[in-house]
Amino acid sequence: MATVLPYIQVVLAILLIVAILFQQRGAGLGGAFGGDNFSATFNKRRGAERFLFYGSITLAVLFAVSAFLNLIIS
Image: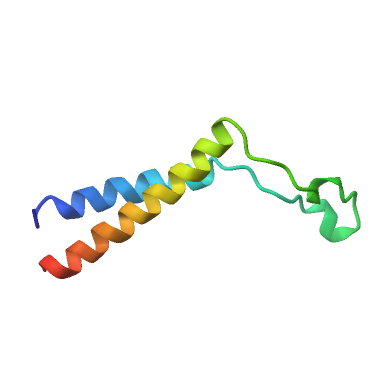
């Protein structure tokens, strides 16, 4: 188990990075400089955006658990 766990952590870290980078940004930079404020409205996550959101949370929890197991085993 101790030999496989670092590889699992690397795979989880790469998947977590990809899941976070694929998510859309909530607010644009134009609002900070006096542009339109329509991008600051609330929108509900649907479809793939919702899947990526919950998937990234799941991957983060799995990564934290694997890191904790690595501390216990080592």
